Amino acid sequence: MKVEGITWHAVVVPPEKFAAQRDFAINTLGLTIFMEMDQMIALSMPNGSMYEIYTPATVPPYGYNGNLAYGWRVDDVEAASKELAAAGNELLGEINRFPELKYAFRHFRAPDGLVYGINEQK
Image (cartoon, rainbow, N blue to C red):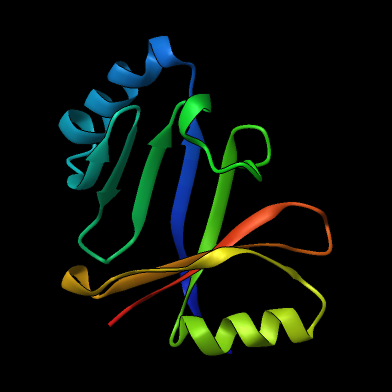
């Protein structure tokens, strides 16, 4: 597996702070909306990195370590998933693909017990 860098970041904020954090990411940091749903927004950066904001109601069932998670860009998310599993890491959910955006990701639990992600952008 070849890692290109930390390119996915997720934060969980209380519902009453969601709008302010969303506005900060867009209006102060200048990030671009990648995808938006009720109480969840994914924003992209020019280098392909992703920043996602969640409320507790929208976090996957396995959670994001309380309120923060991050992940690595890999060249092949499917091959990297197999390597992670072979090394004893717990794969969480399926690989999520967005063909129109040329983006895919998967979460996993590492030996430290925390949830991380891997993603590819082709």
